[in-house]
Length: 150
Length: 204
Image 1 (cartoon, rainbow over the protein chains, first blue to last red):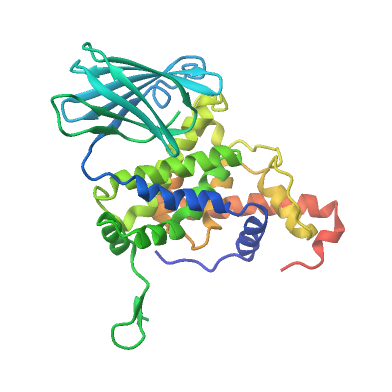
Image 2: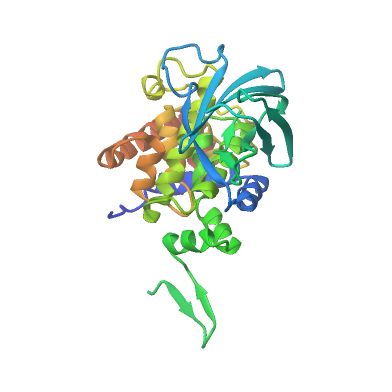
């Protein structure tokens, strides 16, 4: 791609932005620290659907948000309810089974148990970027979801 | 000019390409990861701020974007397009936050070209009057232009492919849009500068 000569205005803008709104050091530090979350032995359940990003025109802000994660044949459905500063996660494992559930974020986690029907609830999850780890009793490999901002 | 500088035998100061850094990070080399962050963190930040997200929301977008990359390190199909991948991920996160806050009306695109007409809320101390007016003007042009110009003003300058991903816009229309956005910025700036003769002196 042949780059045109940078217009003087753009280079001026570059200066101004660097002064007025530089990337904060803590944002860079957090991006670097994200590397420590690298997991090698867990299976990733990708975010397959997010009601917040589909259904244009719906008043998404008022409704509970529904997330669906998929890893192979395993599906994790999670409803996210706003409870002020925190969130309540209500989940369903498909196919249903009991499992140890752990909601994780940068500096903490909350544990819960999915019942035999694969249902779980985790209260008071801090708003922010989180992921959920699922370990079924018969399964050696933990499934972790993609990171989502809730 | 080669991609790496050799300083004697066994001493290499590598200017490693993105593909190489990605591969190294995927094997667990944190220095390679840090280099990727240094290279692209500003672009992610610029996109989020271009969408007029608050500093806290922009930090959230950045965090989610980089965590997503960590989990996809060995799955990025085209390492040369990593900037585009990060830009797309960041844009989606921005749209989600805008939607949650009810700021998105019908679809971002419908609202995208409307001039915001509002200065950036943060009060910034820019001592140079010309700089201050340019910053003020930037906050008044359309959201699309703000994202585009913020991304273009990033150091190191992103490729058109990255910009295309940041805006969800075909590569072919970036050139013309860029010219149009700079023109809008100039118009706003001139309007302000006309009312403030001090700003016209001491220009670039």
